[in-house]
Image (cartoon, rainbow over all chains, first blue to last red; front, side):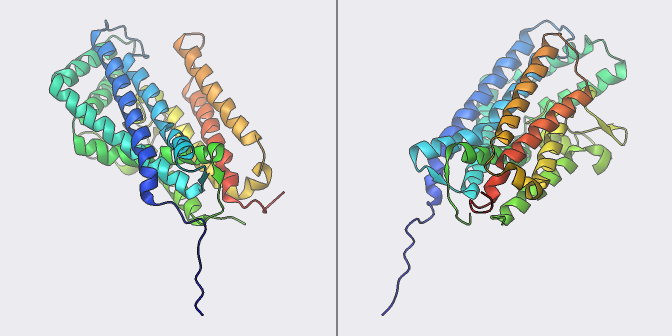
Length: 193
Length: 150
């Protein structure tokens, strides 16, 4: 007589993760894009004060902080909508994929915005340079800062570069917050993954 | 006994690379035109202002001092997971430490922004280290079975 092993708790299919990953990733991508745009236009329309805390710098800090929490929120969404049981590996996978979706969504929205306001990047560069020039710093420090910021803004024009360079770090940080989400929201399983 | 070792060592390797890459062109060479690849790597997560960054081999790192502290703290905390699980297993203090570190970051950033005080590269790096290490330690016990230690 043949015996058949039945796994009562088969691991969830990969597609089960996708709704949480896609929804949370898209929402965080939109939030990241809108905040970036908001601070970007603030920078463009502001008088150059020479303050180190320019809208562009605030944008970097706020957007980074928010996007890093995407992994934890996606795990929370998964535990609410699909299953409260989750292994550490599954939580980290959800986190990494959410980070990747955030980067993709942000890149897509940025490209769409370039069609709406093609001069946005140049205006942002001009405003950034004007603010740095007004800073009370040695000229070589200003030059370094201008080079760094201008190159940074210009490099964001390349779609492939944004995706290629953006996913690894954002994905890793969201992988870790995905694990934190697993600890906080999930009933941990003892599975191998 | 540790479980999911492949995940632990995979993330450990990734965090080690994260720290190495964040050292920037001072370690990886700057003989190229345009933006260094390490700066491109971290552009999405860090403002990378040279005067708010440490230098390595006389060149600014690819990330600012706070981000470097966070990355180094994540790596150092992750490295100590196998050693510290007896202290962290089923304890709430690592999560409390993480919350405390987050609150400290907000206070430090706000105080500096409102010109109540001026923080330094070192103070930003130390607070970042606390946040990164707290994040790693708070998830460390998930790598151990419930019967590892009661």
